[in-house]
Length: 116
Image 1 (cartoon, helix red, strand yellow):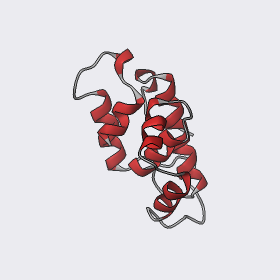
Image 2 (tube, rainbow, N blue to C red):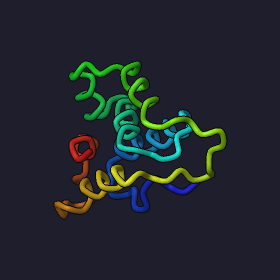
Image 3 (cartoon, one colour):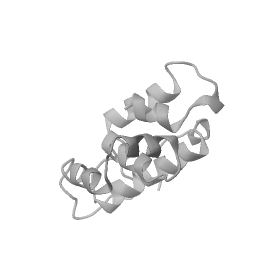
Image 4 (cartoon, rainbow, N blue to C red):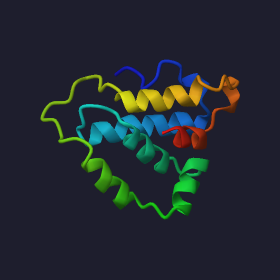
């Protein structure tokens, strides 16, 4: 399986964990693409991250996130080996890494959430 993004070393440890959860959610739901909604779910599942704490403060629940994710796409009968990113997710990841020319070490999970 190819990585969600080619240069994941540009992200913090928690951001990389959120991206791993993001792909796993799309795969578990048998979705044809990884979307920014999956990223939100991935951030929520990254216990202890700034993004997860912010989502908790907003009173988001895992049940609410799963309900929303289930409405993104109908499930596939057969998953491809590599699930592609949606254009929305690519735009969010690009905004989090490229548009502000931030140093590699300063990209945080909360910035990725704000970008989406």
